[in-house]
Image (tube, rainbow, N blue to C red; front, side, top):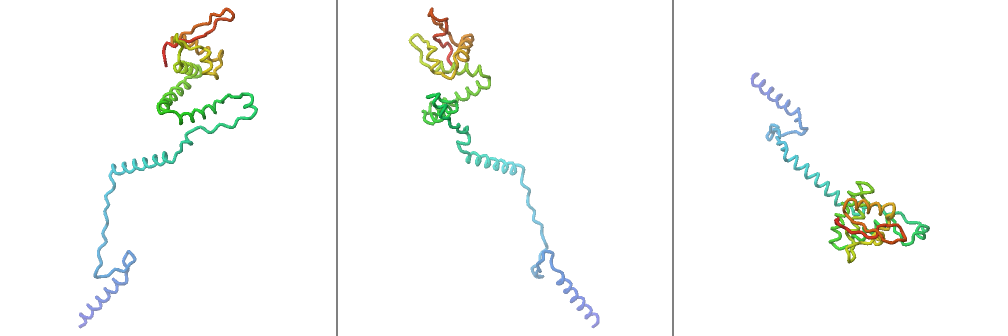
Length: 210
């Protein structure tokens, strides 16, 4: 009898010890449905998956950046208003900044052929500007001559060329550029034969078109 009572007491004590200790998760588990904790194993992403996710994220950022950009953000700022005094003195004259604004507007109006050609002309002009002022003026004169109709003898008068390029000083920019183009073999200058004035270039023959 003592042995049986000792066994029952020990069993009761054992049950009390198990129920007094809560599970590690903080939730009391049922003895009938308790399971041993199991670790969940997740395979790490492969390098290819990580690279693909990175490229996708970069593509989305670039696409959003270009989608939100406006055309006005890529253009120079609007020129300041011209004063009334300047407008009265130079009636009909167009400033460089205002000429640029007219150019952008005319590009929107132009035919598709001229819009596509303007891309090449803009790249050419930008390269000339990097080479210096003399190269820029020479390229400007060469381009103007290439786009002007010639007379019956195949010449372009210097007077017409000056009208086409009114912003160039004749003695300071236009004439030196013509002389350099002639030394390069691109044009031939015909001098005036008038006895009243010193010989000066009167007509231009374009030998090599731009």
